Structures are given as structure tokens and as C-alpha cells.
Amino acid sequence: MAVSDPIADMLTRIRNGVKARFNSVDVPGSKLKTEIARILKDEGFIKNFKFLKDGKQGILRIYLKYGPGQSNVVYGLKRISKPSCRVYVKSNNIKPVYNGMGISILSTSKGIMTDKKAQQENIGGEILCNIW
Image (cartoon, rainbow, N blue to C red; front, side, top):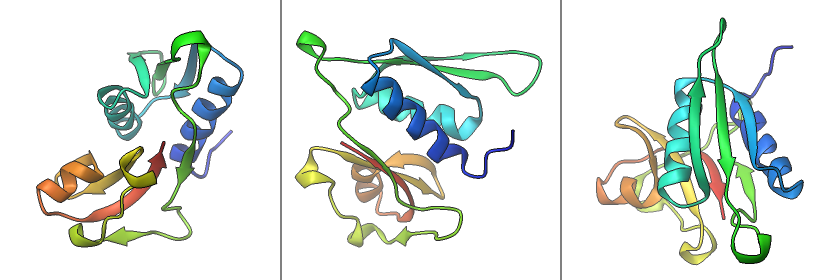
């Protein structure tokens, strides 16, 4: 089945996996999703990820992370820029997510990066999603 918004599908699978207390979730792979998973790992929202090759596009296996006593590390994920309504920002208009408790993931001319790194490099881009 074709998915019209693959990033929203990935975020929904992570959100549902966290609510169901899964150890890992499988997502159809792509370079963009791998970069988003890399940022989530670097920021401490997931344990790890692995790209598994199969005969088609590959599978991105995301290992979810929980705190002490199985408490959630990921409280929320929200898709901001959608295929029907793109949201672009300049570097000086990037707003912090929950006063810095969360991150925004941006697609910039220099690749996929967090809101903080985009502000450091003084570049704007398309806000893909917010995670807190």
C-alpha cells in the first residue's frame, strides 16, 4: 500500500510503539528517515536504529528508549510541514519546542538538522516535525 506521507507514518509508528511499550518498531526505509532516526538517537529520544536490507527499499528498525521504571522518553511527536501545507522558517524565526525541552527537525540546504544547529549555522528551512 502506498503511503502519502512517509514521515508522518514513521512518527505514528514510533508514537504507537512507545504507547504499547514495544522494544522496537519497523519502518520502511529511506535516506530521509535514516537521517531523522540519527538525530533522534543523537538527541537521546531513541536507543539505536539499524537499516536492514531486503529485496526492496529496506527496513529501518528503530529501538525505542524508556527511562527508569519504563517511563516514556518520548512524550509527543507532531508533524509540522505536511505535503499539503509546507512550513518554512528563517533562522531567526525558529521557535524553541516546550522552552527547549523538545527539538524541531528541519530540512535545510545543508541537510537534515535540529533547530539549535540550524540557528548556530544561521540557516532556515522546512520544519519537518517537533519532538518532546
